[in-house]
Length: 78
Image 1 (cartoon, rainbow, N blue to C red):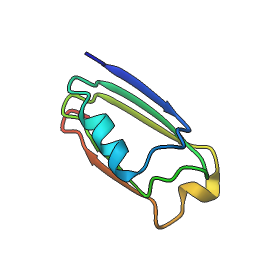
Image 2: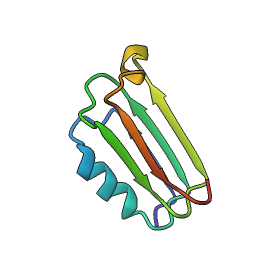
Image 3: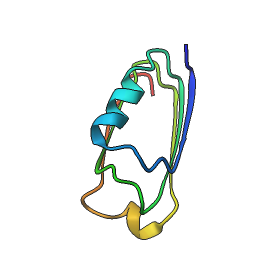
Image 4: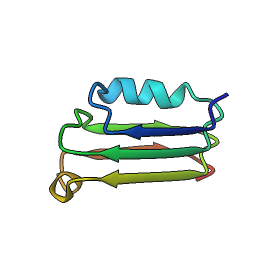
């Protein structure tokens, strides 16, 4: 049972793989994500019913404010 997950500039992820990975961690409580300009994810989908802590770091300021990048968060306990 994975309760903590750190994703540090994972380049092979895409929109669907992120959503599948995170939603498959049924008891996930802590999620840390570090993203940069090489990230291929456009819509970063997070569905984690037990998530208590979420930290997302953008390592490139221009990347963080790009209008095509979306966070879709479903975490009722956050």
